[in-house]
Image 1 (cartoon, one colour):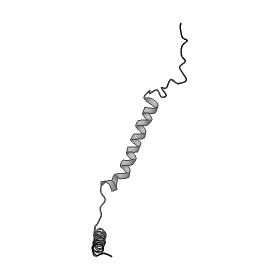
Image 2 (tube, helix red, strand yellow):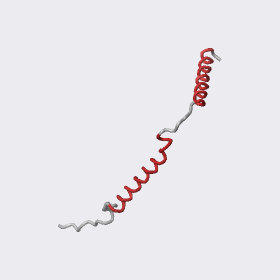
Image 3 (cartoon, helix red, strand yellow):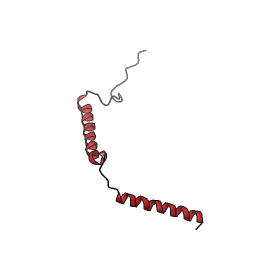
Image 4 (tube, helix red, strand yellow):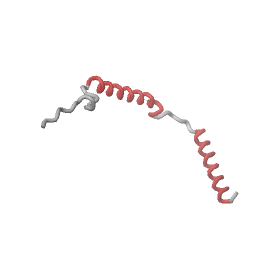
Length: 78
C-alpha cells in the first residue's frame, strides 16, 4: 500500500473510532422531534384527510367536466 493511502486510511479509521467513543459517552436527551415527531405527523395526516374529505364531499365542486360523449353537434344549416 502506498504511504499516502495508508496514512489517509489510518486517519479515517482513527476519526471513526473517535466519533464512536464520543457518541458512546454522550448522554442523548430527546429533542422535539424525538418527543413529538409521530404526534405531529399523525396530526398533519388527520388535518390533511379532513380538509380533502370536506373538499370532495361538501365544497360543491363538479368533477368530470369533460364534455366528451355528452355533447352532440347540431345539424348543419345550408
